Image (cartoon, rainbow, N blue to C red):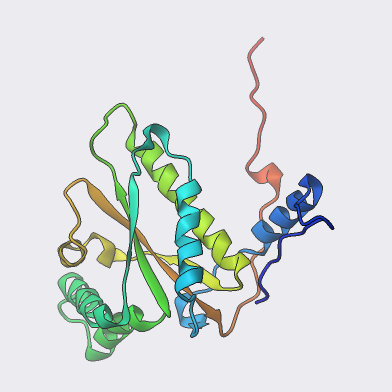
Length: 210
């Protein structure tokens, strides 16, 4: 995947028309690349800082910062694998060794792995739905920055996100909810992109009764 380059004028400044075209191209080029299709190298320290920094531009009603991200380094992957396996066995005590191995393997796939967490308590005047929207915007900013830097990315969930073991491992507070994992890496293989829905499928105009 080629890194997206922002257009610039001869003077080095981005003009509005070119910036709009570049932003549209970036948004349309973003697609999900599953963790099993991501390989090393992942973002380096500076690139990861740029990706994480993009989250700070998300809308945040009340400036609550109702989300956070936890990086899962290589040394912590076995502990996460234990959580995945234990969660599977809690749901299905008869799970086979092969199924347990498959559950564990998910912790080791992506070169860079983060857990997205939302804080839904406190400040009752700002509904939980608004906090989740803010977290979603932060994630989308990160996905777009990763795409701009030439990396593949994916958001993944699963029943283990709701397990007590995962809550303990990531020291989630009572008011916090694990939303999804964010995986980043170099695209090793890709599938055909799904067709984007047309605007007519999700846009309508308010009709006011006469």
